[in-house]
Image (cartoon, rainbow, N blue to C red; front, side, top):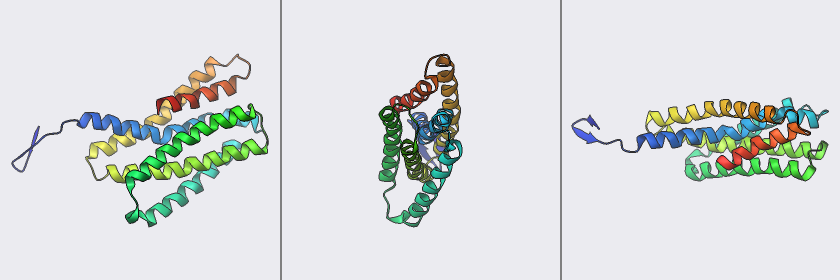
Length: 193
């Protein structure tokens, strides 16, 4: 309990709200970080297409253009709907990675590579929707909320890297180990979020 200008102000539920903000921040980048950490798998099946470079080059323009459009129409948009659409798109794109891999049985080719690039573009759109909206909403609230959200963004990279190390080690000696490890990383994201 604190006192501000003679008023009794209660901060009930602040810790829980900070945890939720951290989870939302983690959810914003966990899917994209998972896509980046399984690039060794994509480099193995898409030998001629340089996925380690191309996926990021596809992601960035979609994120930038979407963010520019959202910035222009900011006053007319419902930020909560924007956030929900962004997080839903993260979930759907993550599920589509698994569906695409299962449908193609982990085979390379231009068709599956275009599908992966399309999903990468969807991650860019989702990131612009969710991350931009969350930063905008939380910046108007308690400063600890935006700090917690940004800490969640940072933690997502560490968590996905640790998860990828674990899955690579677990499936290192198995047949088709890269594919199994990559699939486990994405499936973990879908289950958690």
